[in-house]
Amino acid sequence: MKIIAETHCHTIASSHAYSTVLENAQAAKQKGLSYLAITDHGVAMPDAPHIWHFSNLKTLPAEIDGVKILKGVEANILDTGGKLDLPDSLLRKLDWVIASFHEPTFPPSTVKDHTEAYLRIAENPYVDCIGHAGDERFRFELDPVIRAFKEHHKIVEINAHSFSARRGAKENCRRIAEACKRYEVPVVLSSDAHFAYEIGFIENSVNLLKEIDFPQELILNGDEEQFQAFLAYKRREKMK
Image (tube, rainbow, N blue to C red):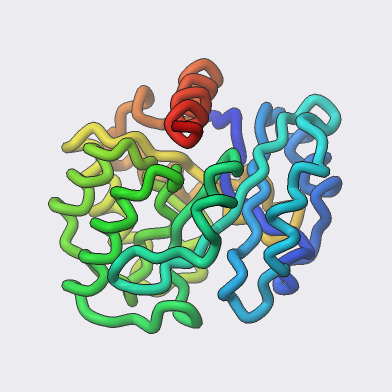
């Protein structure tokens, strides 16, 4: 199983990561990837870059060494109303917006609260992808949330980093992937790389999807034409 895009990585702009944009792009080229999404943490995280970082992403070239650069963010979900830590006026200009729960910006709460937040996030037209939803601390009601993601054209991330970094993530990711299969919700496989050598390292996610016989056609970053079509669709929707 091969991917054509790394959809989640961090740079030294998030100070718990250790590589530059250029180093990540060079690693993506070595891995044979066509796309690289730069998704540093939104401003509410303790070590996040300043908001100017995101407004100035336009400075980055469209391509580095033949790898197309998606200018994005891993935005933080702040409350049950689905508020994010970047304004819509900025989110709409980005190529790839991930929405994620993180403990410093949304202390783990109840299944009801997590579910409500995800249902509101599903309605946000500027969100492209749901980040590492398999975190045990942020359990949610699976079926209504995955159905909402389907209805509102959200992509669900199967985050390979979670398997080692987040307790209970493997089994939760399995349940989420099975629900995505059931409701035909596309997924992306990502490394959530914090160092250039991790770019494109998705073996944990691949193995999980093989175990449940997940349809290849639902792996959005497994096919370049399909991935390009989604980006074009979202670009049109964000500009409305």
